[in-house]
Length: 500
Image 1 (cartoon, rainbow, N blue to C red):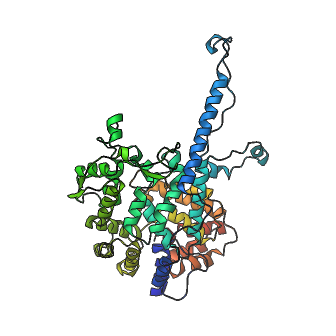
Image 2: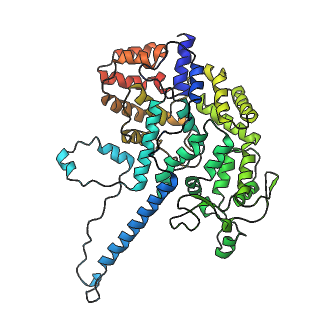
Image 3: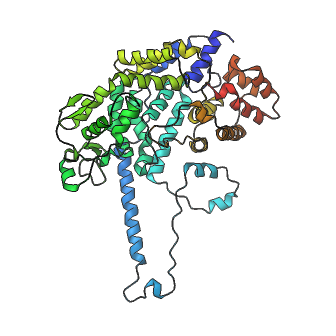
């Protein structure tokens, strides 16, 4: 395999989301292609004016919750016995009317699409209008999948996925999280993936979905007006994760006292609820009555600013901490290159981050320019999102329905926007290569291959997608497959496709 062939393979796999039929150039510089994608007008923003903002989403969620509450109250009122009627325990049991079935999960919906039940039976089931949170979740998931599948190489979309996982929220955190996790990514991550880290940090920490996810909306300064009147207290969840996960990292020198100080500094950072007492429902607001008054000291610096400016100043300084540069660079190198990346690569990325004042576009360009990022062997296993998108791209499959992809992600252990904790999904290959995980990859590859329509002949597709990087063993396995369907599954399961 020539050096040029290897470089293009790495561009699509290590930095991007996999090749598509006919997308592997025969000439040109893959580094320049990656840099060109970084410089695309609009960056990583979704060109989707139809997707609503977080306030619009939350206002619809609030209205739906209120409507359902009123319906439950009305239903309860109709079931109360009349004054001259015997109580339920004095007569025959009252038989309640039919109740609505619970909303199916994404995996249940996807599974139902392949059900063998007769169409006539299915037609007898009344259609259910999806709840707002389900409707908005699917719309944003669909937009994300479409953007990833249509990207020239996918470097920008990989950056979106990396930063979205670094600053993760969870769709499992109530209706707010389910409805607006996608909007959080659109509004707080995508605009900044080639911008400044400080700007992304500020956008993330004031976003209603993050404030809800890590409970800062309920955090009250002990000596604030609200704290004295209501005897409610400080919540350190967001402050702790900002220091531990978002900026400096574990073991970087901050103390529990710094966690408490940052928690006090960002008291009052919340969002307006359904009644809109503090502002337009669903928008970020600063509640002065909940903010801990006076100056505070964080990492040896005194912050005496008034109101929201105190937290903004603290975030600006945290973004410039040397430990933040090291933490970000280490995660960046581990995500793109290797579980244990070359220390020199990590050091150079950290220097680029510091020297360019947290310019994330400069950080990405430094990665592309570094020879260590190209010379490392392909040992990283594609995580479920990368694998799912790569399969769609390789077979030119239309992403017109997001439900099968969501089902695959659920089964592979990476449900979209739903990590198990604030540290996000693992970036360690061993966590995606467990026996159970490999078994599920085999099953889903076979299922995907059965649904392939109008794809090139298997060996031609191997040449187009894997190129000269395809081993003799992979070519032989595909050539000897008992059916075209089996050949496609073997392509997906090949080491060259699974690893990057």
